[in-house]
Picture 1 (cartoon, rainbow, N blue to C red):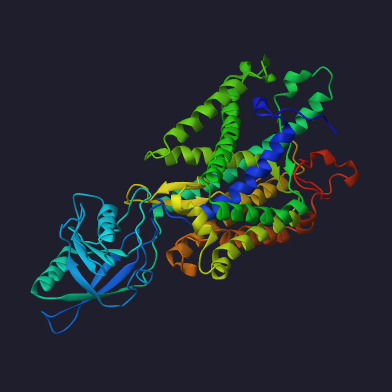
Picture 2 (spheres, rainbow, N blue to C red; picture 1 turned 180 degrees about the horizontal axis):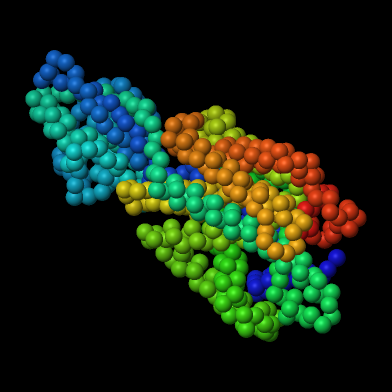
Length: 555
């Protein structure tokens, strides 16, 4: 086996062996954290991300018949059923002593309080009403249409908060003035909403990440093959060899694919049962470390292609011999991550988070490979079962408490998990994002990259073939579109959707069908047969253990 080499361009970051283990750890943490985060809403104070309509039936001594008004639940506060008085239970209705409720109001224990929009945030009004003992809050809008009420921060509201139109609020106020009035509140079943612009942006980011990772991975494999030929020439020298790929593909084996979901579940449960601040600090530190590695690789490639004369070995104290391009690459990567850390609460911080996430995912996709379709099937099917269990089955086993949702919301202190792509909802308030977990990109992406490498397994130079990459990306886009449709129709009854339930059948099923139609299914399932098993370099298997036959490394 060849000696262990430094990671190309990031020799400052550590050895090949340490990089492989860090990638494995990052992959597991990113998967479980991102899957949980995808079930969360934007701000910690928010409890839902889709509009929920309510029916408000008012009875008053001033009229013989009841009147029904349409309202809209806020993105924060409890559901009507989970409120202090439940659904359809008559609740006395009163007007707040301070119409805007921007300061403390008189006691309204067990009553629904009517107040008006303006002068302070919705969440502040709700908190003041809750502190006064209100069972529900009805906010009168000053607009002609109902609009979702959002919040910012980590304030906790545990009573239902809803909005009604100005004319309806005025009528309620008149009825209260004419005598006593009560309201019965129940939720309406309204289809969810999917922001077309935000969904398109997430789809584009995910697809480009996978395409970039596939193209770069193939370039690395072909460059590595050329580098081996150069190194076999004693006159080639180390500088010529350094121009190729630095980190050979790392393989996921059958055993590691089988244990992957188990490890992810263990990590999720550890976070759930500890829920300590230091746990979330560690996860955020893992994300930052992964982002530094990914950004370093991207900056290195960009700087080296623009300033080829810089690509030469230099000696640095402590780090030893590294490529000169590593210095500005690592520096820029660290600065980018620090800027994000310092400005996480800024309105524009999501842009840096997406850039950092894309760099991390691209780096994993180019370095971590599936040896064959069999291992890929094990990994993706296991991940889909993980999503199904923790989203749909587990809440019924834990007294309706969702481990994923609690972890995503960061417990009582509302700690945040950054392992997802974000894009602001069009027309939404600050902190209202559409989201896509990293696990929904990286796991299907591993199979798509494998398909691209398999397609080019006999291509040593020239124009790469795209016979598998294009239909694989098409299948991935189809799976995401199915996910967005599930969000719209609220499949399963929760706001977030386990995207892998739609991505795995589309990507894996599409791969199987396409490979079978080309007569290449058996070869793809087993792995390439270009080399005898005795020629295989077991030193390249740095993730897991077992006996599989690699096609990705034989390009």
